[in-house]
Image (cartoon, rainbow, N blue to C red; front, side, top):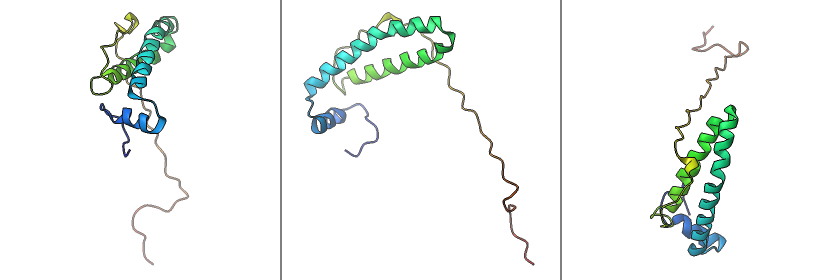
Length: 121
């Protein structure tokens, strides 16, 4: 449908109906079930965050992404569902640190010609 991103609105619901044959009512039920599943698994993620220090930042990113995405699907511009009753496991989680992106410096091969103008003979 000419979109590269699904911004809040009915475009996604229409696309799913047109291409997959899933009615908007069925989609709402699916969003409810997904919301419930995310709320149910959040305590296990929180437990792993507490038990494995190396998983803490990943767990924070998972919980933050899930919460944001479920809330955007439930938004009045998308499926207009009641506010999400998330799990207390989502509360009190600080923002995950921004991932470091190492800078890779690629050296110039000495086999290549030098830069700049060529000297004329």
